[in-house]
Amino acid sequence: MERKLFTALQGENAAELNDSLSAQGFRRSQNVLYRPSCADCAACLSARIDVAAFTPSKSQKRTIRRNAHLVRRATSPWATEDQYALFRRYLDSRHADGGMADMDVFEFAAMIEETPIRSRVIEYLDPESDDLVGVCLTDVLRDGLSMVYSFYTPDRPQDGLGNYIILDHIEIARAAGLPYVYLGYWVPGSQKMGYKAKFSGLEIYMGGQWQPLKDPAGFELEQHPLSNDPIAEQVANIALPDMARTRR
Image (cartoon, rainbow, N blue to C red; front, top):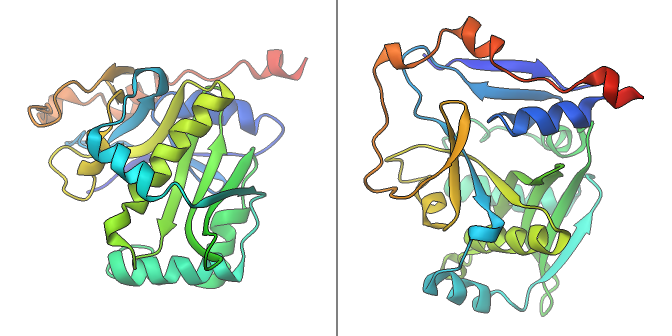
């Protein structure tokens, strides 16, 4: 059974809490931070790209060239009809049986707009048609960019838009002097998440620390139930920011 650690993200210290817990493998969903905490499995591993260690592969360079004409636009976290229309097309094509398949326009707006921290919506437009072809809800952290959720047109599979959005976020982080791009979770052996392991400089959060993922194909995860700390120990080992110091 899937199990997660949750905490509310609210108040004047929300940004500091998000920064601290994101660096410990947590992800944000609206006003909540969560991290998988299953009793007998540790397959969901937080992943981030070390920007300084990243070098694009030949395939990734081709993806950059194919999409170099796209116009990037950073906006406030405010949902639009065009974004929702693209989101629906993306889900219907790629995740029709997923947990978000029934999300209506109000739930979509909540996903985009309910953020107590510094968030941006990064849009990608085709200048020839003026069509919106890609979107990413992105959090700006103290040490990087967190790609909360991205979606793109399913009509251009040859363009590799999903990979391009990640590649562009690496460049945004590099230009801003931010060391990491947080990608969410990577599951060893998962075909749907295999693309993340194709980015050099990838790190995974495991055993309470970030470590380079050197050989994704040969990666073996300890699945024995005794390898997972009890939930009480996991909670006790979470480092929280010094809120009193932050308020001064």
